[in-house]
Amino acid sequence: MKTDSILSTQLLIDNNCQFLLTCCITDSSEVFLCHWRKWKKVQDFDLLDFESLILIPIFYKQVEKFNIVDENKARYKGIYKKSWVNTVQFSQDIFSTLVELKELNIPFWIVGSIAIENIYYKDCGVLRSNGVEIIINSKSIKQVLDFLIQNGYCFKDKKASNEFSVTKLSYGKQLQLVSKIGSILYISIGGFPLMLHNEDFENNQIDFNWNLYILHTLRPELEVLRLILNSFFDKSKNHLLWIISIKKILDSLNTTFDWKYFNQLAIKYEVTNIVGVRLQMLIQNNINYIPIEYKNQLLNIDSSFNLALLKFQNKHTKIEIFKFNSLIYKKMKQGTDVSWFEYLKVIFNSVSFIDILSRILKKR
Image 1 (cartoon, rainbow, N blue to C red):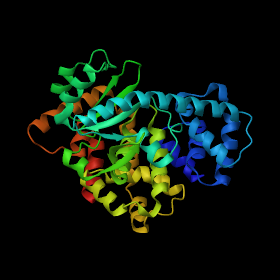
Image 2 (image 1 turned 180 degrees about the vertical axis):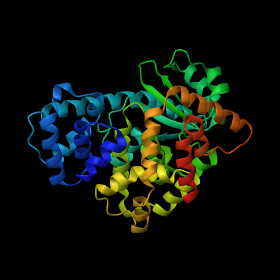
Image 3 (image 1 turned 90 degrees about the vertical axis):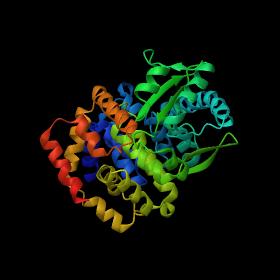
Image 4 (image 1 turned 60 degrees about the vertical axis):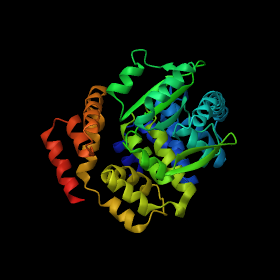
């Protein structure tokens, strides 16, 4: 199938994981059965890699939905239940911390798996996660870190320190702090990878109910854009969950998703091609509520950008990201707006690659 080729090419995954991912995102029982049979034929369940394992809770819900008879169904259910229990435990631990943080009038926005599970899935077991992600603005970082450390949190990376985080990488950085019982709080500073300003969060926030307490998250158009970029940059193998989450949000909102505003955001943050390449996969999966004019725009994306994305994924390293973060910090101190083109110039030293991007960006 054409969808198989798009998934394996863009996400750099093997056939086993590709079949499983298709099972997780399809709404068609026929497509599910076809890829389920392919997956069962080539995959030994006892030899699942991590990339596939994190998809099993959603896969289990799909098996239930389509009433599939599978000899491993009880094992799928066990993995789902374990995911549910883990999510309840770490989210309850961090929830109390976030309530206190809100009462201190420190602005933050809950994003990622916890927000998506509460708002769109109504099920805290499907997105196999090990922590809660929040976004804060760079002005609040010292106040937030002081509060968390006073309440028993410590940096997951023992080499990290409050001073280093604040002075060296205060923008475009994600920190990981661990609670006393081991729950992880991911803190994205400045909304990386979107690099938003505080007013952008405030203008794009919505309320959601978590444990009968009203907290803030991002409106769906901005969250989908952020998830698309996360699926592109995330090297932790969670990028497949973000692909599935994007589709879930779009499915849940259907015609109420503001595609015009979404397109304006993509243009504003100079990521129209990156967004288009990711959404091409979903178009192939028969999402029929994307407006026809936007769908045509996505399908006409320059094919050379697909190659550029693959080169990026192959060459993207921690050292290069550190170089980029250093550049961002200097630019922000100077009050300079940082474009994605500058980002890519820092990461790549290939003249031919930069030439390709220059040509594509001029077309917009």
